[in-house]
Length: 349
Image (cartoon, rainbow, N blue to C red; front, side):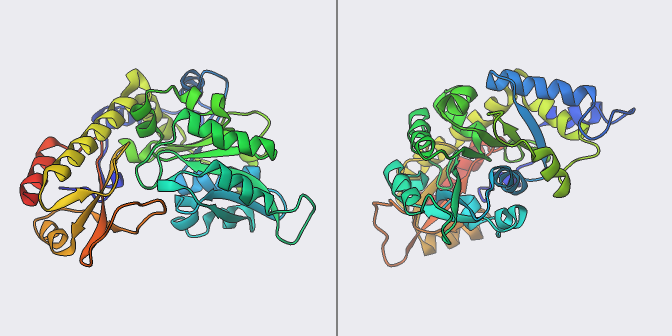
C-alpha cells in the first residue's frame, strides 16, 4: 500500500525495454542524435506547433531553468502560495537565477486567484523600485493539492499576466494527470491558453528520469541553451532521456498511465468516503487524494504497512478538523493496483 508519492513507483516495462533497445552502438552526443531529433519532432506533434525541448535532470531543475530563462534584474516570479517552487525546492530558483525571488499569491485549493494575482502585480512599481520587478507568473498543473486548472482557468491567469506584459510558465510535473483528467489537448491547455513555456515532467508517471523545459513561445528562452550548459544540465548521453520520451509518447502511453493513476485515485476517494473511519478533505481531480483521518487511524494504517504523508491545511479549505484529526495525502501512480485500494478499504472499515 504505497501511497506516499508517485515518485515511489517503478518504471513502465515499455520504457525500460526502449532504454535497453538503444543501449548498444553509438549515437551523437549532447542531444543532437537521430533519436533526439525524432523526439523533438514528437513534442512538436504533441503541442501542435514547433517547440524547443531542453532535457533536465529533475523537475526542480526544469522549473529553476525556466525561471532563469525569464529572469530580469531584481526579478520576482509570482506563484501560488503553496506551489512546489515556493515551498519544496530549497531556493533552487534563486540559485539558478542569481537571486530572483518568489512572490506568493493566494487562491483556493492550490489555484491562483486571477483577481489576487492582479493586485499582487500592481503592488510593484513600473519603475526600477527597490522592491524588484515582476518577471513571470508560474502555475502548477496539476496543483500540489490534487486540483486541476481547467483551460479557462489557465486563460484567466494568462489574461492578467498579459495585461502586465508578464510571460506564463507552467510547472507540469503532473501535466499528464491534468490532461488525462480534463481531456483537453496539450496545446489547448498551454500555448493556446497563454502559456509560454512548461516544465514537462515524466519521472512521476512511469519514467526512469525524464524531465524537460519545453519552449512554446519562440520569443522567450533565447538563452536557455547556454543557461542549461552553465547549470550542468546538458546531458552528454541524451539519447537515454530521448529513449524514455520516445516510448512515453508513443501510442499515448503517457496518457494511459496517467489515466490509470487518476482512476485509482478516484477509486481510493470512493473507498475513503464509504469508510466509517475517514472522509475526504475535498474532491480529487487528478491522482492525489486528501483524506481527514484521526491520528489513531492513521497510525493503525501505517502499522499495517500503508505509506502516506500528513499534509498541512491549504488555503481555501472549507472543512473542519477535530482535535485529534489531520489531513493526509495519498498518491496513486501508474503502478497502483485495485488490490492495494481494497486492502486499505478493509483497514478503514
